[in-house]
Structure formats: structure tokens, C-alpha cells
Image 1 (cartoon, one colour):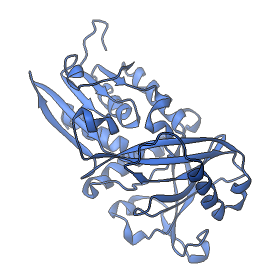
Image 2: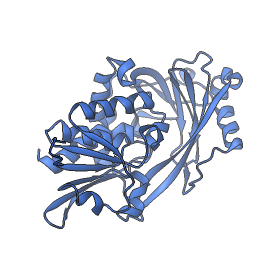
Image 3: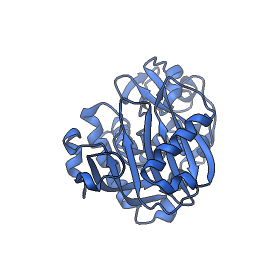
Image 4: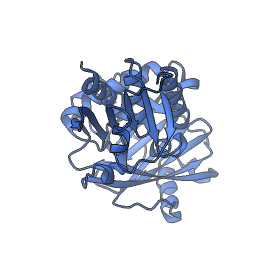
Amino acid sequence: MDSDGVVDGVVVGGGVVGLTAAIRLAERGLRVRVWSRDAVTGTTSAVAGALWWPYRIEPAAEVGAWSLASLRVYEGLAADPAATGVRLVAGVHADTLLSGLGAWAGEVAGLRPLAAEEVPGPYEVGLAARLPLIDMPVHLAWLRARFEAAGGVVEHRAVTDLREAAAVAPVVVNCTGLAARDLVPDPGVRAVRGQLVLVENPGVDTWFTAADGASSETTYFFPQPGRLILGGTAQEDDERSAPDPSTAAAIVARCARIRPEIARARVLGHRVGLRPTRAGGVRIESEPLPGGGLLVHDYGHGGAGVTVAWGCADRVAELVCGS
């Protein structure tokens, strides 16, 4: 924003999707504000695991390109993990076949099928990979700093109508996640509840996932600095924000079947996030605003916002600025 207060664009939503879109616009020279209802640490993004992987996200025709664009960014950011929160970490996707993935999988270096005896737990198939694992509190702070270094301004502001932003700037980018259900309104937006358990890391240095897309229960653990994140759940239309003790106990038990030492790890805390899924998948498209303005939608990423954020941000920049 210039000192005269002129604003070219307002991005509504301060999670990973909103911040990456704002960065792309600001680094193209636009004067941009981010309006966020929550502090960075209070967004759904802050609760994320967050392993790069296109999981439970549509539309399939677009997701591969968005994911790979984001992967290339994270691979670069992993050169400075202390600052960016991004590390490349080895792990296993159990119960997953290479043939069941899209063409994007062929562009992931080192992704390979495992022999049955190499797969942990009661699984006969799996894939090994070295993928970006992102410490979200650190990464979100880094994203905000990068945005502000490009001249952007973050404001803590709750929005009840997107026209509030349109009154300030000719370009509005809607990255409101679950709130898009009421703001757009879009009845296709639904919550998928994810619950996590944070424990002291008993020496686990690789990640593991076993996620059935048709089940409300998943099994995964991600080693992050100072903690091991255990998951998880995918409970559709469940908007409870408080952790459920029985769910937490079941998560620990599932993870301990893979790594028994997890059963004895001291619990540090619990987290719940509501993933914003959408019928038909991610919505990235523009529509005119009265008076000649432009509204760009970028929401409906479910639990894969981190995975596709940069690819989606590139698309937003194309819609706003041209290719």
C-alpha cells in the first residue's frame, strides 16, 4: 500500500491460501491488503500437519499442476528450513499404489513402490518418498513477513459481506475457506473435521500415512521440531471445535500400532481444524463487480491447501494481472 492509502487489491482470508495469493499479487507490484478474521496462529492452516501430498482434493484435471507448482516452491524453500519451516523428509504412504495416482506422480522425484516387507504395520503395499513437511506456525510467519516485505499490509478484520472489500479496492480475492459458505454464499462448502494429538517425539524421524479416502479415520504421524503430530480424522459435517478424548486415544493407539514407542510418549496438546471442502472441488474463477471491479474466488481446498497453495496463487495472479 502506498503512503497515500491507495489499495489495488484486498485478499480476504489470512491462511496459507490467502497469504500465498497476496504474495503473488504484491510481488507483481500491486498494493495489497490481507484482511484476516484470525491471527495467523488462529487459522485452520496453523493446525495443518502439513505434508505435501494431493489428498482428497478436486478437480483432478487441475490439481496435479497446482500441486507440482507448489512442490517446486517448497523444494526451494527447504534450503532454509529454520526460516521457512519447510524440510524435505522421508516417509511412507501405506496402502497406496502408484497406479492409483495421477500423472503428477511421475514428476515427484524418488517416489517408488515398496515391497510388502518394507511397508510398516499391517499393510502389503505402499510408496516411499521424500517430501516437503512444513512446520506451519513457522511457515505462516515467514509468509506474512515475505508479504510485508513486498509492501503488503495485514489487517485483522472480520468480513460479513465481500462488498466491504470491494468498497476499498477494485480487486477482491476471496480466500475465506469455510466462511465462503455464507459469504458467497456457496452451499457446496462443507466442513471436514480433523483432530490431531501432539506428543513428545520418542525418536521418530520419518513420516507415515495410511489414509483411506472413504473412511473418517486416518493414521499418520509427522515429526516436527519439538513435537510429533499424530492423526487423524476426516469427519464430514462435524463442526465440533473441542478435542474429543476418545478420538484422541484412538489416534494414539492407531499410530502406536506402527511405532510402538508412540504409546508411551507424553501428550503435549490437542488440535482441531475444520477443513473447507467443496462439492466440485476448488473454485478458482473470477466474476465482475459493480463499477468495473473484479472478484476472484480461491476456496474449497479441503485439507490440501498447503499442497496446492502456490499453484492456486499463480492462477489467481493470472486472473488479476494476465499471464
